[in-house]
Image 1 (cartoon, helix red, strand yellow):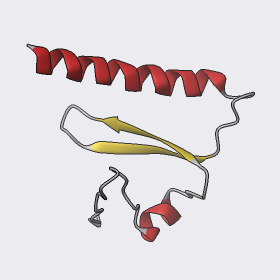
Image 2 (cartoon, one colour):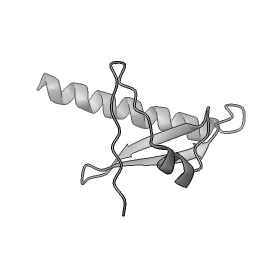
Image 3 (cartoon, rainbow, N blue to C red):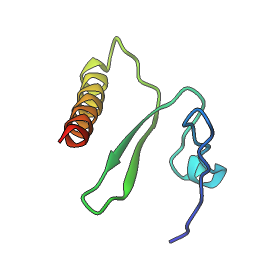
Length: 79
């Protein structure tokens, strides 16, 4: 298994190495879903464009997961 490093810029953006983009078939304007595993690993899923008219369920699921994670993080910092 190869390891690749990604640098986070001041806007919180990362550049995914070209080798990873090729493996995952990621192209410009594709939407990725980043999921954190129990072990703390980030898993990227995607490599396809999301058509809002045809894939609203997938898009809504991704948004719900994002908002749930944000809420959980917010609650843990308040405690």
